[in-house]
Amino acid sequence: ADTQDKRGGWGHLTSKDYSVKAKIPTSSVGIDRCLYLGLTLDDGDILFAANEYLEGFFTGTANEKLFEKNERAEPWRNATVCAHLEAIAKTVGKTNPLCDETIAQWQYIAERAYSSGEYSYENDRAAQHEIFRTHEARLVPMQSGLILSRRGGISAETEDAMLRHLGGHAASNGHFWDKTVYSLPQNFKSDKTRRWMATFEYINQFRNSSLYLESAVEWLLEQADERGLWDWGSQTKDPWGYFRYFSLNRKYALNRITDCSMEILFFLKKYNENNP
Image 1: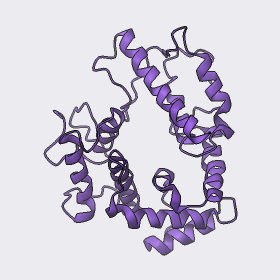
Image 2 (image 1 turned 135 degrees about the vertical axis):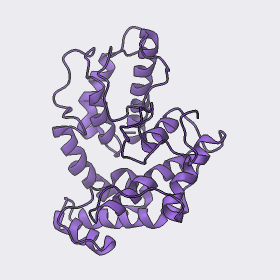
Image 3 (image 1 turned 180 degrees about the vertical axis):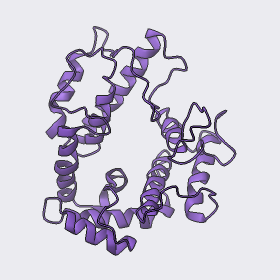
Image 4 (image 1 turned 90 degrees about the horizontal axis):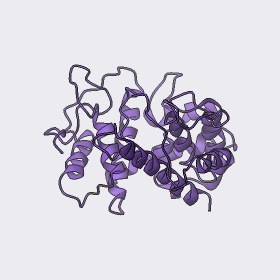
């Protein structure tokens, strides 16, 4: 709460202001951290203010300009805002009506892009040009998290095709980092082990994620100590706003073990839900 600004955010939505040495680099990271800590809309003012800040992008009260000048910038930002709004609404078992149109648009795009059972760039491009009135060959990346936030809007066949296309690509190439499920660290206590979780969690958003994650889950379970806890040791401080920690001071081994164990347990819980 001490780092939240008067608008309800933590600086710009996604673009870090390097002139300000902020503990939470962007509003997007700040909101993700609140949700990771388990805050809900019923827990006082923090998420309520953040929700109002996000809704301002649709109601016209947000005083934040787009930094990107290409025609993909606005639909990409709208999808990012709605992903956060839906996640916040979900904390009290609701959806946000301001996102109905944006989510419906992306679900339509997904159904078109994967209509054959495989991804079609041509179909994706045609759908995005139709919906967003864009003309460029470059497209907004498929907003899988937003699409899956209301699973009932797409078919099981479409989700399976997304898993095989997007999840399969992440499995072979990594997500954000070049850490793949086919090349796991030889030593769990390594300074970059945490980066593999970005790949695991991206794939794990889909049902039947065991198609690519079964061996990774087995590997994670093998890394637990005799207490059933995990410790990946000191990690490289990544510059893009890592938010998955509970401890204010991560220099102590006990805090580090707690943070590591909770991140892996959250992942395993979702894995079990998506692979009954």
